[in-house]
Image (cartoon, rainbow, N blue to C red; front, top):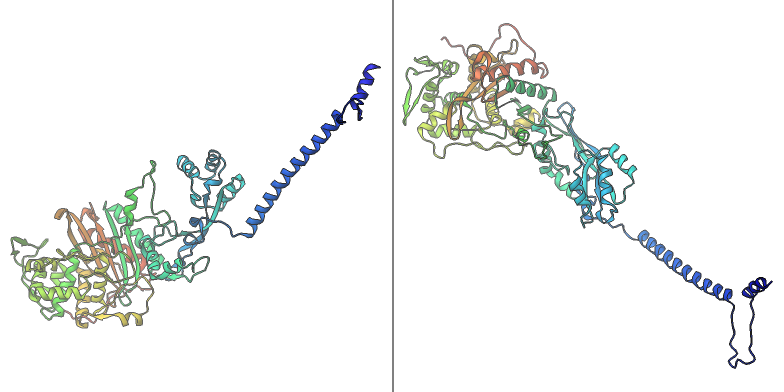
Length: 585
């Protein structure tokens, strides 16, 4: 009973007015006081929550009405710029863009860098953990993590739900033919900017300016057609690669040129590279420098002493200047001694030779005699007129500049007459040889389609028509009776001239290392194409020989035998009627 009364008292709400309390204070019960405090605390807490929600709402409204903040590095500038497709003369695809995405991070928004690296490593192959972790922990607003991911990789990363990780659409340049035409087409960097070949040429022609102005983003550009025939290009590269392997050479290459239009139909230089992966990393992470040597294009970007192929130009010079004709005879019975040097013939006949025999037996002595008839100044002027001493003008970037003596002396003229002392590019040699075959017109080479009318507007006459006819005769003669026999293809009547030059090593001629070339024309009844092959430092050749007749000439045979039908050249068997002078030897 007592405990019951106590509980009632503790719950009661009453006011006691003591008769003896002068101030008349009110006494409030314990529970009533607690209720008042609870209400006060709830009001304060609700106030805090309301203030927080109001602040968040205001911030969201601010984000909603303001422009999105974006790092300059991930703006809509260069990396999404489109490039035009590159196609061959028949419309076959050489280069195109594919839509890709690249992965980036905003380090300030990364919650747990270790977790992000660990999860990304499950999706992104060969991810550098330490470097990625360093980027994620940096104080910057933006960091690239991996460029050009596949759609599957993007999907897998999105499924990870990582905050502070984003994607940006980009373009990736794809070369379906791989290394087939790498030196012609070239390649781009990760930002789709042309670095070599025709890719770089396109940037130089205004594509880079359009890109900078943002006018190429997501715009389909008209394809750029090249002069090359991808079918022919593939054959030329195959033959060059096989010759390099079979003859144990440092390098090899070849080019096919239309003699009337100057169009380059094929050009290959091996070793080469895959433009889809222009650089290659080794296991230790370093760049494979040997692989990158394949960037070097020996046909247009390098100069060589072209050896006896230059005898074509020396004899053409003598014919054009009227110093000799096809019935002329020069004395090649003894070596020439000049300035401390002795000039001999390789397997010389040690007798007077007719001009066709000088060409057939590749006589250094006979060729030097013709150069001496013309004189030093006339010799230099003639080679300059043929474009062999100045930098070649064409679309291909990085064309090498020929070298020649600062001052021409008689000994220089003599050695240059048979291809030593002047270094020029193989492509220039082919262009000059085309002038010997097409009636005497020098037509600048091009890697873009060109009609005969357009070529004629650019052509410069450098030889008389009669000189060109005589040179066609000499090429045909050598193709049947001389060093060109190893390049002969039954039915297609190949003519040409070999060139075996001692290679210059550290400023000195190496007697046991050759640079070999063969310049050919076909079909000789009316030449349409020049084919020039080179092979650098072969250790062996057909039947164990190392000269151009055993290495470069068989390359020509293999090329013409396969490409002639593709180029529309019909085989002809039997005797041909030639409009050429007949000479009794």
